[in-house]
Amino acid sequence: MDSLSASLKSKFGEIVVGKRGALGQFDVFVDGQLVFSRSKTGRFPADGEIEEIVGHLKAGREPPLPHVQRPRTLASAIRDRLRR
Image (cartoon, rainbow, N blue to C red; front, side, top):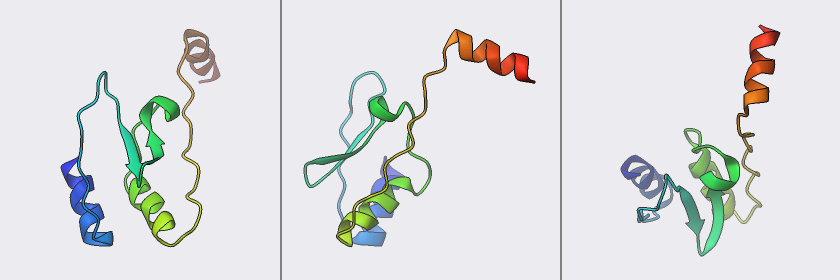
């Protein structure tokens, strides 16, 4: 979180405060709006993804929708193994 905070401060002049969540929670809010959620996407953000979202918001544009990673199930693991 410290490197993300430093990156957003240097690129946009924004001060970011991290708050510890429960069970690996990672949510990013901008002006009270949820813009990224690990629980909704099933993953942590990619490098530069949060900066891209904040850049869009600062420019008054709609941010890109985060890619949702499907949870890996036993069936999908077997299917992936058989495809190899």
